[in-house]
Image 1 (cartoon, rainbow, N blue to C red):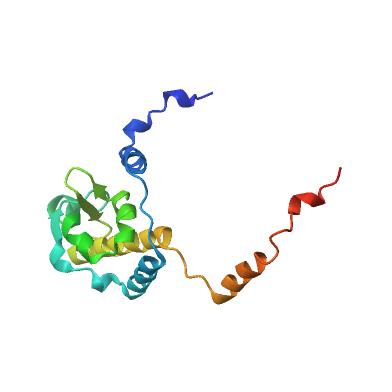
Image 2: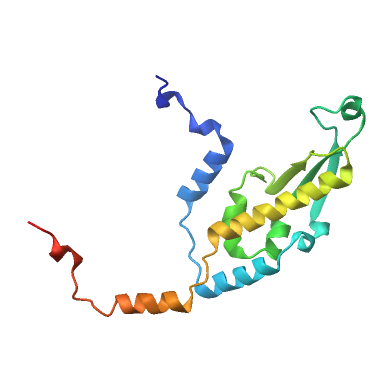
Length: 173
């Protein structure tokens, strides 16, 4: 049987970055207004809303199948976004999730996203932008609370009408 004692989680960089962020600083709480603003921002956010001037794109040789084209053409796109500039355009509530992502490079304090799914440079650049968009949407889904419906608010109010009701008093024996 394979023992878990030999597993070193320190060798998994994303896990250690995540653990360090979770343990080093207390989680910041956000009010309802911050969640409302983030929901509104996310609803308007699309791939075209990403500021192109903040993204630095370089090209290199791709790997994998493709014959001699892989060895000759620099089609793999690598997009680097410095977070100190980029985070100003993103709601603050999303920052911890973005910085905990697998695309975050701690040393350079930037997001590094690669796209090499196509032989075409422009398709690979678009792939990078789509990955960044997906990252931000995923950060929003996990960190922004959903809006509470009026029916849910009423349901919670009705639950608190009977404070003397003890559910444990109905136990048998």
